[in-house]
Image (cartoon, rainbow, N blue to C red):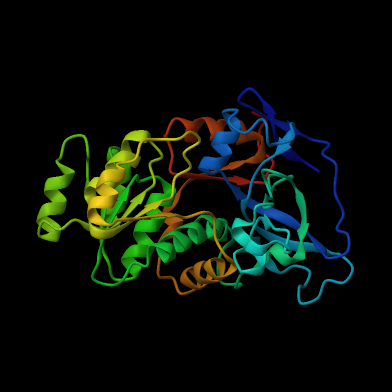
Length: 344
């Protein structure tokens, strides 16, 4: 068993003798193929979640793999089946869970943060978290189902309709996926992103892009919306300035969706919210229906999400991959968990 573990102070170390956890009743073990690195993982690397993770912590929750062991009482899952995981464990007893909102359970545990994640040779998880993948979806592409499910949930929360205008502030992987899902709904999509490479990526997918540093975003919106403003604004950049600006670009009775994680309170223009009767919506993780829709979108070949993958590295190079993503030198890096490369 090998695993890449966060050991504190910005370090990822390779453990060549990681303990293997065999599946108990109601659990399955997955031979992990690929694990992606996301912004939340970077928050962990930077020490923002040291009070939450158990160091050394095996990270990773964006993943794909195949079932290799099945625990007692598990039905409907076969050895060798390609799967991904919806990495959420909720209590099932509280009022929130009983109302059908298990993904925001006050006792929610996020697998890969609150418990060991997918950057290990074999990963044991509750069978209830497993999402089947059609055989024709490659395992590399399937490792992007989890972030795609995030985007599906964000767009669902926004109630975006065909013909509406969606402004996405922030062109990282989640912003790009929101743009693709929003475009698929028939909306007019605008992406505001200062990085030229990310703008080019979006433009190649038919997304209208704006560099907020050199262009007047308000003027662009005025032209494309006849001066009304965007129907929906997605704040994905996670900066105090972009959170404050988000309300400036929404039309009267528009919706502002807070997608990014803001670890500290940030200013909001509550007067504009009142004056225009804006809705401010939180959008956290996903529901199972979002995962299932993400799988269906990939299965139909409707979204070119594979183009997000900048590189694939062996488990030994996980530290390098985290550093590259921290410096915005890549869009999405996958860790090939089974490949044995040269030690980092």
